[in-house]
Image (cartoon, rainbow, N blue to C red):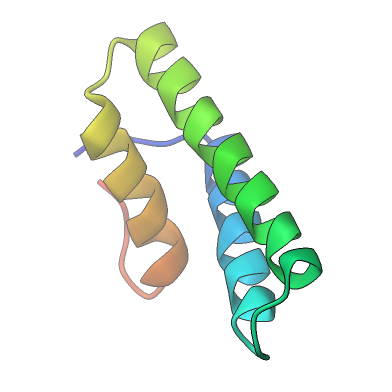
Length: 76
């Protein structure tokens, strides 16, 4: 499995936290804007890191998400 950088994991974590905040109440543009921004930042970082490390982009994204969403398991 791909090994995401600490920075990528932190960006993923920020996007997940922003999603939780956005979905904790009824939709408003202002509530969801930080989530969209965090998700866009994370996706751009995944693309850049995948290109820089010649890693499959999808595998890298999934490894970062696994590290954040399933922190009780280790990322190989």
